Image (cartoon, rainbow over all chains, first blue to last red; front, side, top):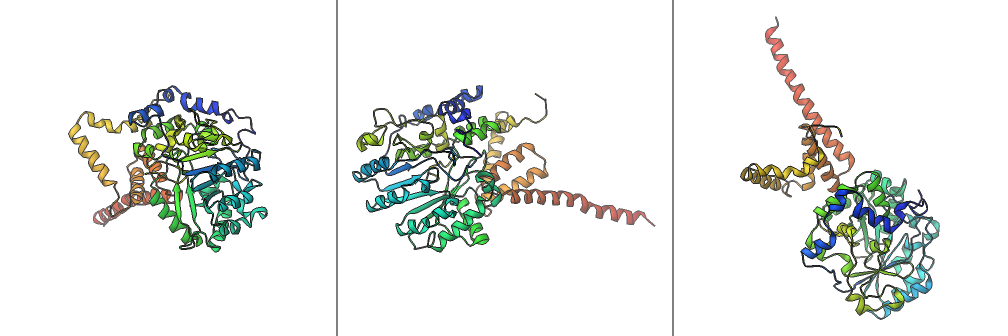
Length: 348
Length: 111
């Protein structure tokens, strides 16, 4: 499977994506606007509560091409953060009390400067989270990474859309489940996910289809029971994430004729409490080229930080960023539906 | 568009049944909500029961609603289909067990 961009697909264009989620049908045009919903609960313009998480998308290259990927990542994507931009990130981190650095991609491990950067961030005493697809750690080039990350106390948060092989492989490709189980066992062997080891291993659930995630705690218990019973695998936490109508997931919604109903469901499930806790309020997202965004989703839609805030890491200004106005559009309903959704799971 | 007795859009209007009889409608929906709350059975178990019953009573609205609900609650395809088989077994068994009545009648009428 090729990325949308490699297929020259119209939905590889962020402007087309925004037009689709706003205007695809007459009914979609009539849906409530996200800004109005915020206005109704006194939350517009949306402002940060203070940046606590520095999320860096170190590149869109990935060894996988998952059907739902909002990044449209894949082996054919060449966008990779340079060492110079990573140095700029370190500069920004040195001057701030932001304590968590969250590395994502693509497969963040595939950035050629990954190990060096993890070492440098580690020296700053920051907590590091790596978002891994698991299968990359089953390749010869990266098989030493689990130990490398364990030695530096890196938290690993990895994708596992479901506890069963069938549904996992449908979304992430044939063979993903078996490889994931192999890597999870390996991570357990070196201490990840084990009580009192201090090595955090979290799983990420996201629905394999056009429906919302259920209760996070209930799903966590199901995962714990099934993975232990079937494979002897343990982990710390499970984060439920709602699929946002962006990129390849948006393509799935359009092709399966689910877009209208999915958008309607997101909008009717708008939860003011979830809106209060959306991740863009305590996170800044840095793109592979150093551009700044309110979240990884805005990054993929090329909606940079604005309203007077700097929009590139070279112009980093924590005070201005802490006082910025967050940029929103209809996709934001994905983070405010039901129990809410963030990179750390449900928000209520 | 083909005209059918069932329209998927009507599921979203379920709450409107209170318009013609508000008091009883409210009682029903309060009861309905309470039934599906987490209790001695988990919300997930209740959803699987609802899916099975939806098949037994052949309610297309309920089948749509509880297929989505069981998916959201993390049920696997195997679990969902097993629930449908439970409904089928009871439904089929309910017919078959009446065969005993037929056999009794045959015995009574026969020489």
